[in-house]
Image (cartoon, rainbow, N blue to C red; front, top):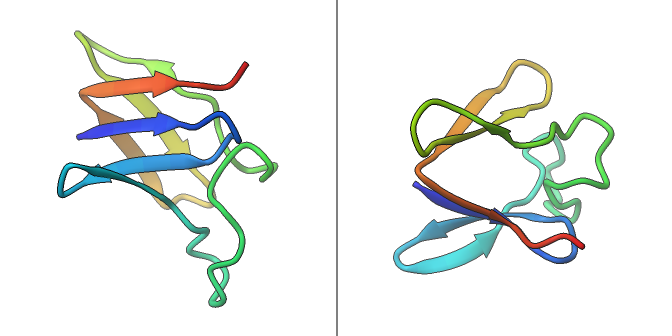
Length: 73
């Protein structure tokens, strides 16, 4: 899976060859982005091999990326 944190700090996942900003799944209106503005958003961690892991809030689980970039300054 390909992913990135864009320059605005929002998590994006590549789906059908396009990166899509991810919304917070805790809110029904989907106006809150999943990203570094949320106090529960964890920093990406390098895993085994070429993987990168992000742990999401409240025991939702981990996302494991085979390609990942962090575009924050």
